[in-house]
Length: 86
Ligand SMILES: [Zn+2]
Image (cartoon, rainbow, N blue to C red; front, side):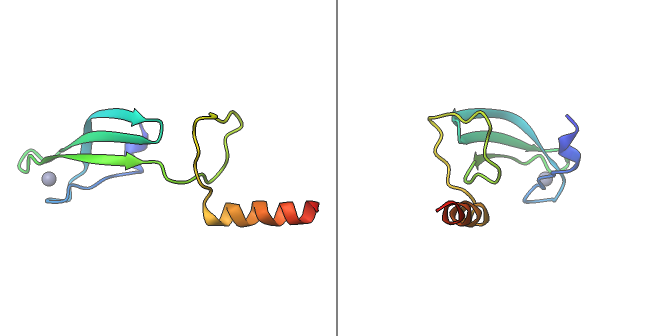
């Protein structure tokens, strides 16, 4: 995995990067993860929840069971296009 270098999640106690120990998808939009601090002197471990909240760019192969609101900027764009079509 190379993504972790760009998107770091710091330990709330010592600021060192956290590592994902385990993650479990409970729904397509909601996931729970166990994080562990990489700093051996710290040793913190905790639980986090990751929720997908908005669509920024729509999927070309959308899952019909997933209903996600668009980010406001995209909603405006779609509304403007709908007005232009009328
Ligand atoms: Zn730590």
